Image 1 (tube, rainbow, N blue to C red):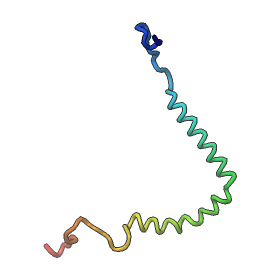
Image 2 (image 1 turned 90 degrees about the vertical axis):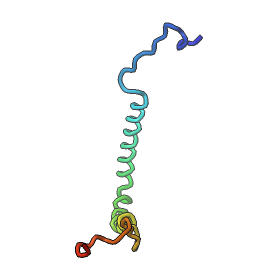
Image 3 (image 1 turned 45 degrees about the vertical axis):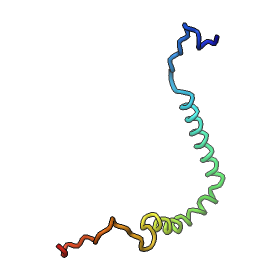
Image 4 (image 1 turned 180 degrees about the horizontal axis):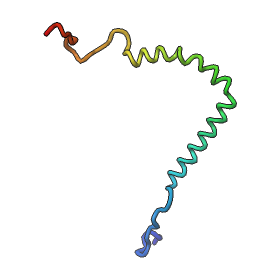
Length: 85
């Protein structure tokens, strides 16, 4: 018979943070420290790549914001024209 099967056994109420919450905080702390160390050690590489961000942003914005060339589907029908009423 295990301790949990004993009729007098009562589970202790949880006090404070759970183990998952503590592990999550430790992971966030580790990632923050690792990110800071990687940035300081590789600053020249990271800052050298920043020049390419505007150039990369142009095709990405064109693709995601405009939907490509000439494929604008506006829900069908004619466009609203105030003179056609």
